[in-house]
Length: 51
Ligand SMILES: [Zn+2]
Image 1 (tube, rainbow, N blue to C red):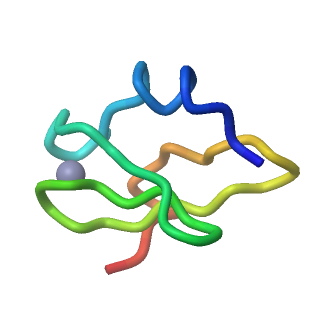
Image 2 (image 1 turned 180 degrees about the vertical axis):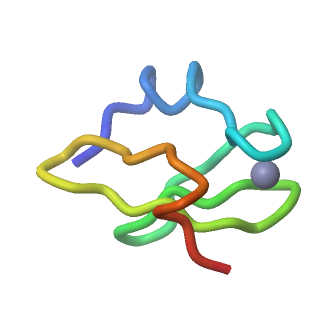
């Protein structure tokens, strides 16, 4: 599970907005891109994100 403190310092690489945890993904609160979590580590890469 992803640490809440870590979530606070993460930002969307596309628009720099805050992100939140939704299920198994990190979701941008602004543009809605979804970033995967692999082995407990958020993959904050636009190339890896999905709409
Ligand atoms: Zn975004």
